[in-house]
Amino acid sequence: MSTPSPAQSAAPVLALAALGIVFGDIGTSPLYAMKEVFAGNHPIPLTDANVLGSLSAFFWALIVVVSLKYVAIVLRADNRGEGGIMALIALALHDARENPRRLAVITVIGILGAAMFYGDGMVTPAISVLSAVEGLEIVTPALHRFVIPITLLVLFALFLVQKRGTARVGALFAPVMVVWFAALAALGVRNILGEPHVLLALDPRHAVGFLAENHAMALAAMGNVVLAVTGAEALYADMGHFGRRPIQLAWYGFVLPALVLNYFGQGALILADPAAAKNPFYLSAPDWALLPLVGLATVATVIASQAVISGAFSISRQAMQLGFMPRMTVRHTSAQTQGQIYLPAVNWGLFAAVAILVLGFKSSHNLAAAYGIAVTGDMVITSLLATVVVARVWRWGWTRAALLFAVFLSVELVFLAANVLKIPDGGWFPLVAGAGVFVLMTTWKRGRELLRERLRGEDIRLDAFIDALFAGMPARVPGTAVFMSADPDGVPHALLHNLMHNKVLHERVVLVSVQVFDVPWVPEIDRVEVHRLKGDFYRVIVRYGFKDEPDIPAALALCAPAGLAVETLDTSFFLGRETLLPRPGPAMSRWRTKLFIAMFRNAGSATDFFRIPSNRVVELGTQIVL
Image (cartoon, rainbow, N blue to C red; front, top):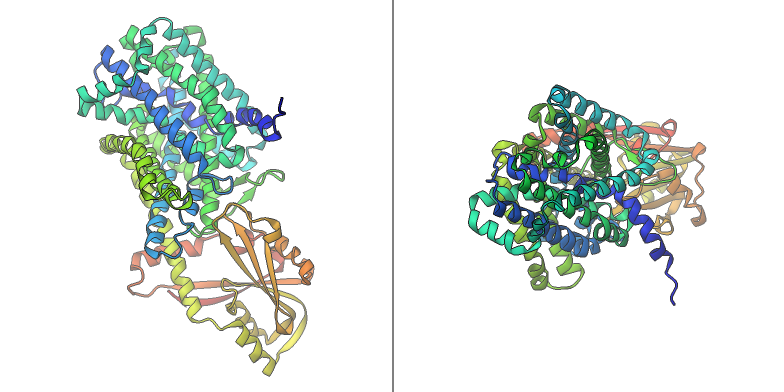
């Protein structure tokens, strides 16, 4: 009898932990998904055939989109164990460096996917918490006027505690979600026992017949069916925390059965009592359980929102590392867990957007129209990028990869077409928000490229510069000077300005260049590369992955075995601070140039980003016409 490996033994424990982080979003969809089909902006008639057909569509959407696409296939497209849109972009770019056209197309598609994620991240906390608190209206209609204030209070508290990190409350997430999914299953079984013939909806012919007979009305219903699969991206995005196997165990063994039972239970209730369609989730519970269920649902939606907020922090940091976003303040909330971070600008920007959504749309019913289009857009982009990965990285070839993902795209494009109908009802919001993020990210990416070109055009080659120094070496002063340099072979502007104004050089000059690779982590053994040059000049190349946390003093400490021992108290860090001036030209339109300059001026400091002690920093400015 074989002994299970440590990884196999840990999988059930990790699967339990994953319940509290990964499945919150998709696990709270029963609060509003079924309700929107029969009582949303585009309701369908309440007939037995339509109830069975829509339930069949729910079930097979969960099977095809979540179980097959994400859990069985996309989870295998990991970048050294990491998942998510940024990891997928990095994989898709793996062999596109020598093909500028493919590189540009993949980059644009990837940025669009990240932008859609932010649009989705704005809507998720709003609709989740609001739909949970709306249960108070089922308890008694007199509580209706308290729904929005309580929702805003819960959301404000959620965003307020982000600065403390999620490590302390994270241990509570999994037990709560176990109770939540158990409650979903129990409510479903309770109602299915009253109308067992609802299980006929497992037959896919009901879904096919529903679509064939209802045409345009069925298309509108599909725009609400997609609400059942919102949160599928989280399974992939959070893979790095738990691994593929634990997520698969949790999904197939607990989450999927609980969701199917609950949706079918809601359908059974609607068949027995069509008036229950106005809120089949809460009306499926006995009266004595309503208040506890509202409380449990509120906590579950807070957990679902927490996962989205943490995902926004993670993607923002990865985007900064890959050069898609300007530097922002990153605070580390745990000394033990590397991924526990807090970005104040992202946190309060998201809260402002969520509060505007709650106040503007006023109900989960209205917000549902704004929800689906961002989710389906993200799914389509994931399928396109995954096709590239399967074809090029897995070496399947374009034909087999295209045939595989054509199955998923055919379903997702139907969802996308259905959600286009929702644009006038609120679907415009995530599109506008995503377009805004897309413009910001592409402007920053293009602006940084132009800035590098301008600086490179004024560069002096390092070897030639050192040779020229020996012809008339300036005075050397004790200590070590560290100059940050984007180009490892060029002379930093800060070094030139220091020589021009101070007429001295330190006895040791270290030129540090940071390189970020399209892998999540760079092992510490590969972190630094040290080259000793003439005249006690050193070139140090520091390597990070897009999920590593830059720390220049820590990296310099790794240089000692190579003969470069850096004492922080005896070291001065020289940073360049560029002042950008716009000029008309074909490279970038005037309004985008001004936007880039505004972003550049408000970007976080390199001192904070690279964890350089502020009392050891000297900044030297220069003006650059962009």
